[in-house]
Image (cartoon, rainbow, N blue to C red):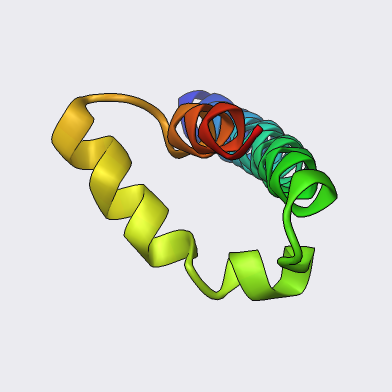
Amino acid sequence: MNNTLDRLKSRITYVLSLTNVYYQLRRVLTQTLNDVNNIDKAFASIAMVTEKTVNGLWEHYGEYAQLAQKLGQSTESAIKTSALFYQ
């Protein structure tokens, strides 16, 4: 009987951990998509006031990320600040 209960407990723990992994992965993917969408909007605000394209600005994403890291800001924040400069 104890062996059966131990196996049941083990299976329940396994299922719950898989459920937790699923929800954590879903949360991370949703947040990543939201971040990409927000950065795309920030790039669009630069593209509206310059002759640059959103796709062309994405090619410079790494530069914005490095700048943001040096300044201790988010990449989105650095891009938005850049958009204000261009305006």
